[in-house]
Image (tube, rainbow, N blue to C red; front, side, top):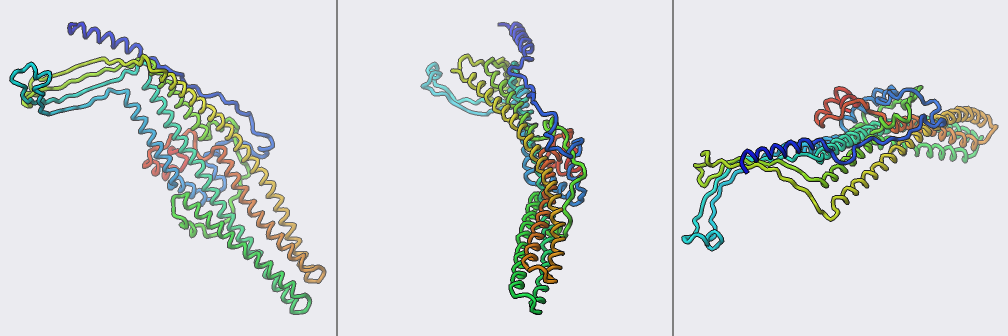
Length: 500
């Protein structure tokens, strides 16, 4: 074939290949249609309504500057968040590696060697004087370019894009959980401090009662039994203080680790007593349909499904031939000094074609496997949506019922305090026995402690509700930057800025 005919043939093949390059085999992804309720269950949303925009910075509704600061510090220092961000960086790098296959691959090569063929070999048989050793020097560039006729590489890039987006959503899911855990740990610290205050106040009251019984015993008005019972009651109350202090210190340690600091580093900062944060007058929850946009775990499941759908196309492309363009341009000579000569130029071009005609059913089995994995991830996505709805409904119920319980406990505490005042007056005048005083004091301690715990649970349950709704980030924000840039952005913009 003449050089002109060869060029014409190559051009024709190139035109055909380019004409086919728009073909992409495999299913095109479409986001699943998910049926969502129009509203939350009526019993769960009593008093919960409004726009869900507050979800993005929900911790600010408690109007606690220290809590705001701790949330910001957790976004800067938490190690689980840093790990998740490096996973995003890894996925981006892998995506770049996959996308690189769309470009021509060029390699440089060179060789300098000396060799001698066997005199008794096939070549030596035609040379009566034997073969001499010879040199060979070569240098050149080799290029190869896979023409993505049936979209195998495009589907790989599509899968890599969706996988990268899934890691971004996984990062955001860590962010949502981190902010909630930070707030809950802080609330636990303040709850323990309130319980310590209540226990201390009851100790003071019971010490006064012990002095009263001793005075009455010295006056011969009561027996030693009253004194012993008062001492027992006081000792029982003081025994609760170390337990509550343990809970407080453990909550401080937990908070420190969430901030990426050593346990114990926050004891001085949080040592000053402060009230338990109060819930806002209005709590916003939005609509159930917003979960699909706001919950990072739901978004992650959807992106994983998209990535797996693209992998069906990658496997399907193996049913079709693959085309490549290859070429080589270099210099080759038996003497290094001749490499610069024009006669040393060597080159070659080709259009390799590979087509697996028979593979024993391997390719179609791989396609079926990818389709089965896609169905698995579709079921996982639908389950994730249901679990998100369940978690949100349960969080609303927990918050609403704890509000009611706290109200009843507050009424009980008020009534018990009045009862204690009356029973102490009656005991002092001899109308009632000391057992009624002991019972009322014990009841007051239990009710006040329960009320403090309930006050903390109300706020903690509200935090859990915000977490269940996916609060703590802006769905319209840009994906996280690189780990180095992330720290700078959080310090500048806060945890829900452009850094995610």
